[in-house]
Length: 326
Image 1: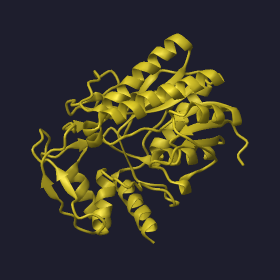
Image 2: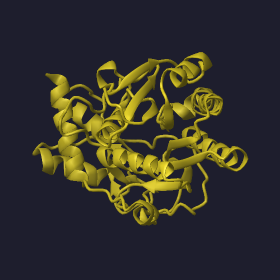
Image 3: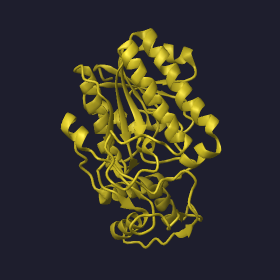
Image 4: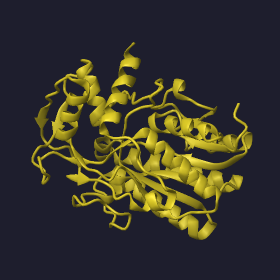
């Protein structure tokens, strides 16, 4: 058992949260996973476990009572853009109401440090320049809107209650731990790189590119892909900064490089030595043409830099999928 400071990790049994827990443990913290396992995996848990839902105040209060929680990393959320367009009620209930429940439990327990997993989707249909944190937020789907609402809530809690918080606006998390055991394993997978892995393994027959008529260099959507290990390290850096008394609101977490869907497909072919030629279908509702980060602020404040490139993400994602299939 790790005797270091305990950090509650909501959604700690999920893809990103589980990598965050491993990074916390490596940094000398004790992760306490809080998860309802709606999408998480028990085999991904690192540290202690409290099973519960964010809307269950008794379960949250129990987690704070059983462990001397010094900070919270909040990963738990519904996060599928298309689903959010079709079922916005789910996103406002799970993401916004769930976060309010968490904040209430934190205040009751006297815990005032929070690292919030936000998203580049708060920027909406921005132009193709690298987006600074000062870029106006105008989300175009309920997923992004729910995260933007939470950021506003946290700003108000900071002013009224002295909450110390960082909102990490990360972009497209990809890749997996090189040691294996955890990766992107979702029943309803919509993300580009894991769906490509599934298509190559014959697990999906409808792998497609959503639109090739966007105002981008090759007509396909442009995104900033960030290795999940780099993302986990950024969360630990934020937790350490809060411990030192720093809090400054939103920070972009990405590579600062935009890659189009076609470029990702080409990279997969090069890294794996296997051709992948998905069908091109119509645009998906809620998708902006281009979204990638300016990372100047987090590099300046934390000395954090993304250490993995797109090839690393693809190779590690493939290894995780092969391991999961055996």
